[in-house]
Length: 81
Image (tube, rainbow, N blue to C red):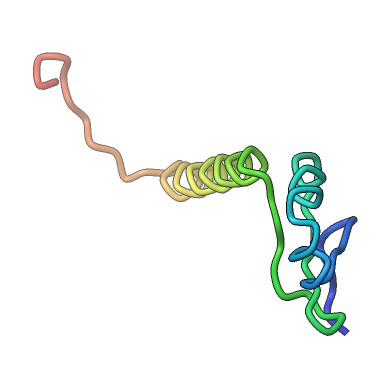
């Protein structure tokens, strides 16, 4: 059985019938879209998606900093900048 990574679920059929209502609900929480009782997709609000992208960017930046924390370093003078 596949894990569902959302607190709410909706079937593909229900999504087709009540798209506006389901979309309004998705403003606050991700919704798993099920096809034959298996997760087929996740519906996220634009705001939630943007927050996830910012979080991924922060994690990527953190990884780069951790990789470079011990050098090598290049010394330059203020005049060279």
